[in-house]
Length: 275
Image: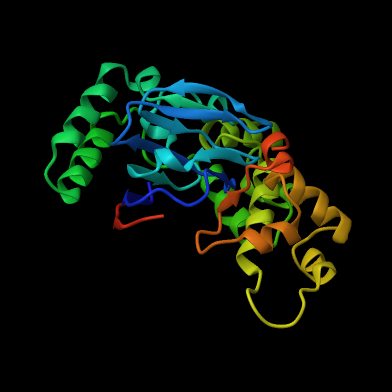
């Protein structure tokens, strides 16, 4: 786990946001509405109604948030691989998914939300959530040693996947297997997402015109075309479009409701917890 967060504020002026992937998982509880809608990002007229407490699995492409459902929300942000001790399915079964918590925790999830609703303070809600996670611990908190090693190395971005696997001390097949089970996506795809994240974190807001070719090469892309292709695959928009729409929350990108977005397609208080 990394962060407990809470948001209570007015709806955003835009109806939808792209939420960009970072390889992590998120437990989200809607404290206002009795549902969370999971949208088809290619056609926002299509969506699935989920229960008001969900687990967002690790994503390698953007998904869509309905900002009207982000008025009063509490959640847990897990580090990459941090959620696997608290749910029984291997993390790769949750790749690209949004799942009602009752499917993972049964009636305990509904009971937890009811307790959160009547808690008098945000601190009390955080305490309830921490206690709930402790009660649902099903595996040791520590990653497999090779996975822990891989996550550290991949975060730096200075070594290739093959180099890291060779240094991990287990076979490539076994490394990929345990990495997917605990983190949720294969090592190469995880590194692709982390490279994308390094790009958006490094973009300047002001100053000279951005040299996209230099950014591409400095982040391990073959060339500018490779960067643009990857960016579109992951974010659904070009790097230039992202720069125009970017907000202080780098992974939350406002969407228009015009034809191009419609069819092609955060914390007031926080508390740190570990590990």
